[in-house]
Image 1 (cartoon, rainbow, N blue to C red):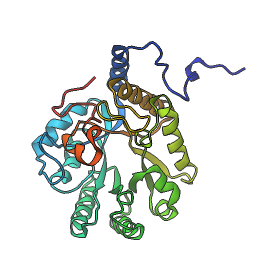
Image 2 (image 1 turned 90 degrees about the horizontal axis):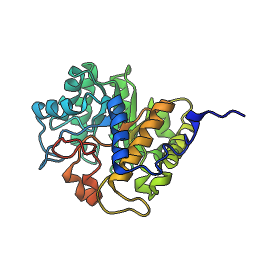
Image 3 (image 1 turned 90 degrees about the vertical axis):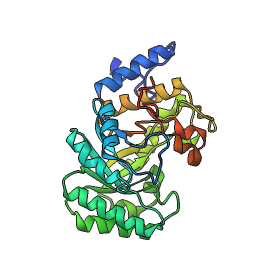
Image 4 (image 1 turned 45 degrees about the vertical axis):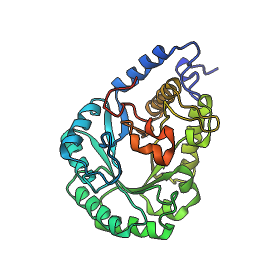
Length: 294
């Protein structure tokens, strides 16, 4: 017999039976206040979105809110003020996963890449992400993406360079695996219609499916989360309790198994209701005004 009480329910996470919403909020605060590995970060204020110019002051204001709770932040873009975030984050003692946003706009891509390389050379990035879900969106071909990755690696050979996309893209694309030093995988049981009861096991399966083909390369969960408001997707239901349960289980697993995880997201963002439907605006741990939601 090899019974250990600390391993009970480790596969499915916390035992939420008979826990009220207030109980869940207390657990949420315990994990948050103990510090989490990382947060997906956005500086956008209400009324802003892609194309808006971000100021250094709003970056500082937003980072002041989250920095007591996280070791890392993940950024998504190196233009329109996004290129300022890594240096300011470093000033605040945070580690940075810096990302260049790639699309079918080749001119904008060049600016993103150039700014990314500059901030890495300035010592303001610990991990480097070349593109985010651009294969999923079908805005670049695999070969075009590979050319951008190799271009960055040639200019900053000392950096740990990878690409961000859904976990299955890494399973299915050996050339991308070969090109990347680190795999940045997005894991969303919500967007695969998973019921909250099985969401931790589902996320673990996503992660380990990539680990099986990683050949020892570093894996970072670059996005995962659960919305608290909006329309259900198959068996996935947005609610306060479900968002809390998902966060608690994700952080417990991250702590127990040393899983590098950038939780999505820091703040609610109203502009996301367009591309993602009504749930898009409600993935944050803090609301759009910077108030902790739970």
